[in-house]
Length: 251
Image 1 (cartoon, rainbow, N blue to C red):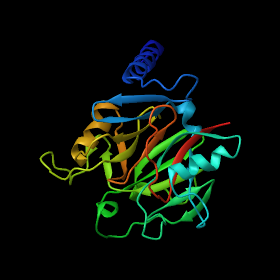
Image 2 (cartoon, rainbow, N blue to C red):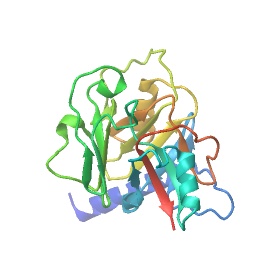
Image 3 (cartoon, rainbow, N blue to C red):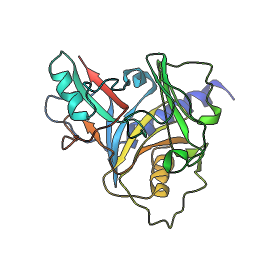
Image 4 (cartoon, rainbow, N blue to C red):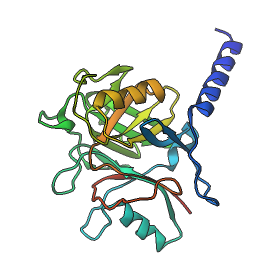
């Protein structure tokens, strides 16, 4: 294939990305370093590969550290930082510890968890979302190379989409509906975070990531307790305590 083909493909991808979003306007004066979207029952943000390095993972290591999005906002209000986006980053134990892998600034704080068990995290396959500079990926946990440490990584489950296919346990006729949050990565390295504005099934959530956002691999972050803050767009609540959170801030 010649240079004209690849140039044409690149242009098509750029056009698709630019028209994918139904932009949600932020408050006057708020300039967000990412795109926002609201599509049907879902809303969230999208980052191009050049924006991925803005993501920051946070884990409250002590009882004094903020555990809620509102706590993070308050923490930043006393500094020169402004929290622009935040969401919960995966399933955690009653002791507010990640159930699976967690890497922060190149340090593995909790190891990869390939054990069998019950509930959503252990609905195999589960997966890992990792970020290293401008590279990001969602991988099945068993495929994650634990010998290489990215800048940030978290494990959650179940996988929503694996190589373009829905998780085999998902049922389109399921009546199991909850608020759900997740993250997906496109073939060209873009990252989407999404949350449902109303209770939805796993199947519907996976369909949104694959068919609307175009992510061949996507990971469930959590359910009924999930929250997503977007400066100037989504402002209510955010008092739920979490373990890991993923965010973007501005200085």
